[in-house]
Image (cartoon, chains in turn orange, brown):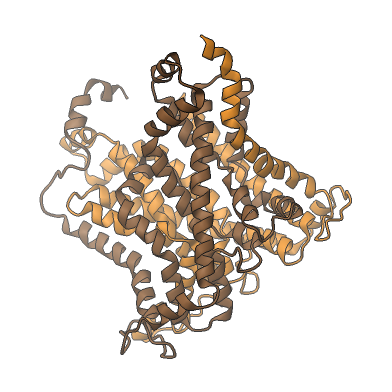
Length: 288
Length: 287
């Protein structure tokens, strides 16, 4: 029983290193972000309290609204794309046995690389003398300036993120599919249900938790897209790919307006928080 | 759920993946082959361009007249590149060691110890997962650079060590270990540190290995934090170095060589530990 008395101290001591790291580098900056957004903090470190001035400026900043729009358009393209590709490949992998490991490995491969790596390769693929335009030229088509046309740049970027990232969601969905008892599908088949009916009536409802998890993860990821944009477009052309994070980065590290950049960060925080809370609510309901 | 309870045996004997029908598999394999080619295409293109002699136009969808490793050797000897690689290695390796140590210690305390404020702390850790790193980027940068951390290794590494995913993973795993193990060790008179080192660490080896692989990949591929905190080659990591190269270097063959080399450690991890990675994502949802 002696150890019980010592527990409070040892427990705290074991947590202490991580706790200190958290307090200094996660919690303090989180509170700091809210605080800084109420100041005109700049590179010199001088600041004064300016109240809601930054927020007023944000609301009247056309750059902010266009970046929000670009981020939302990107999300609307990326999320369905990556959901469709990861669900499709997961279903395919789940219906084969022979060489499943090989295909799964190949499809998962880009996930282990960096977004910077993906950005450099795909920048070349989208070039005038790059891979896609080379293929199009063989069909006497093109060339298409993917990176220079504002209506094409976001879909092109979404495709890069999808290529790099779908392997993760595919694995989550594949695990979900494997958890569905084969007997359910067998029974439905005996009862005369076709493949589509079995998918709609059994697979899809039972896969819902996994699909929901992937949906939330990918939506949050799409709001945080930055690396590929930095490498491939620099926010262009004509700010068509100037997203929220790109705005935080440029306001902070090109114009050195830390206070105002923190205000952009608060918007991102709010969006991610809302998505997380929605997820919590739904997951909570499903468990009860 | 009632069905599972009454017929658990059938579901175990017949997993969903078992071949239910013979033949008619070729459309599935055709689709998978197409998807695989689309996935591998960019890698293949990268290798071809990387091996195309410098100065020769990088003609797409056509095999170059000759292949050369000159670009690769040139990149490896170019100024900065070796330094960036070493910096990336330091960034990743140091982070792996410290995160494994601190998160397993914290995970052990959260799972098996009682101390005041434990649940509050745990909830606070959980809540910080909802705060995107990018939203705290500006205050974090100001904090670290005010303490002289800009362009230093501690400024690069230390702020990235606060990792709630790691703590939670360790806590969940250690929760599943039987209490008797720890009690028995203490009855035998083992000190707390000894219990940690001789019981917690050996028993959590599989999950520590998984976490280690992920932390390595996260840090090796990390970009935004190194981008803002590193200001010279002294601390620049490989991902940041690549973007510097991209603004200076106009030859695609050189850029592709650099990109290819930068991905070698990730690809090694993939080829050596693929099954491991795949299983741990499916089991833990680690991203």
